[in-house]
Image (cartoon, rainbow, N blue to C red; front, side):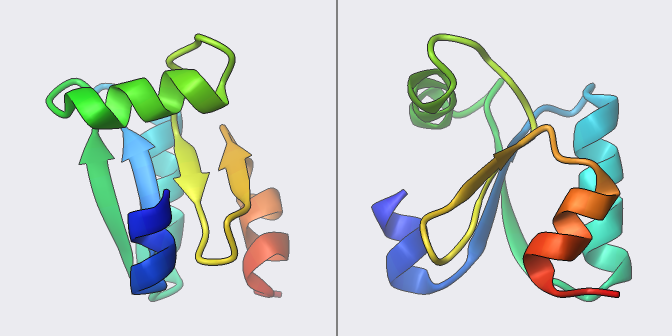
Length: 86
């Protein structure tokens, strides 16, 4: 998470097969929000981070924001509220 904070970017921890991940990524792209995706099926450190912040669960998407806050499996409405999108 410190890497995301230092770079001021949104990091989406996801998998290729997750519907909610695809939906969240589509929402971010549609609203021209830059983000970096970490595929936890391929990135061991990413998987460990997700499991740490989700009490041992591989809950995706886990989205980390530059302010250090985290949303897990957010709806589009929750993402819009967090990002100030109407």
